[in-house]
Length: 186
Length: 188
Image 1 (tube, each protein chain N blue to C red):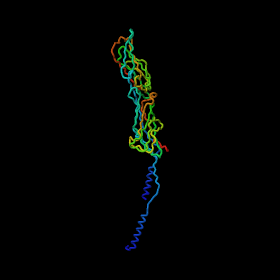
Image 2 (image 1 turned 180 degrees about the horizontal axis):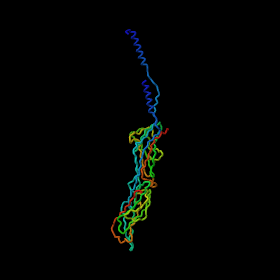
Image 3 (image 1 turned 30 degrees about the vertical axis):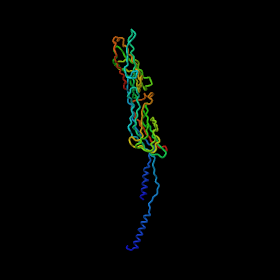
Image 4 (image 1 turned 60 degrees about the vertical axis):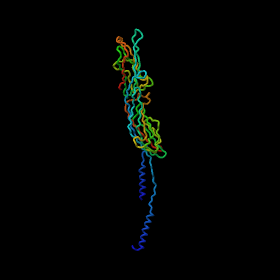
């Protein structure tokens, strides 16, 4: 009789173990994905490295004003904005010799290495100590990091207003510093 | 009681009784059904997954980012000759415009597992709202229950064709839920 009870008990145990579970089951996993704002800017010369742009004012024709101080650099930037923002790039300068003017024309990237919304450049603007907008409407974009990538900044240095010509003096190398700023979103 | 005849009679009765006890055999016949039912359980280690797209180089695009902290654990019993799959899909939230989120599973860890653990698909899937296979040919097995037991999942988030779509990328925080499914066996 004890054996019989034991066998019945075992059958009951197996019955409990055979409870069905759903044939298909799932589990959830949460992911938090963030894109912070990005604003990085770097000025490089035509060789793609950080370095000064050399400009020289001179003339070879008697009777003409000095001219010919031109050079090019590139502003490489990375930008991520929110869905409602754009940025702008501004420029200011200090150290321009008396009697002369430094101006810059800005062209947005056109080669194959940029992507995104690079905005709009400007024609030649005279630079001073007060920042001026040289590119606007910049959204999420990057310019590339190779030589020739970025916003092309064509500098022109020449004599300023005719009345100030008498204040120009020959000098050795002097350094003017242009500050490029990529603004916060607005 | 001192009568020898009576003693012999009593002895005879006792012997008969003992013989009777020895002849009694307790038996029971019955069919026993042993059943192991189809069985499927799935769970992740719920590791926090935080992905951030960023760059530190002016002129460079935001780079891709990966996370391999999530492990999927399962227990599975299947009928003979059948198998299951693990699938994944996005159940809530949307992958931000201009980006894509991919997922690939490693084969199951071996430390605490046993059975037919299947084969991970080596090509990453681009996660969407539709279930896609990430592990196939899972039969009867268990993965172990430790935090790093099971199938290691690698999420990779990256810009999608940036030359065309980069301007769509917008700074913000996005929450996404991925649901893993251990399917019914293919004999269902």
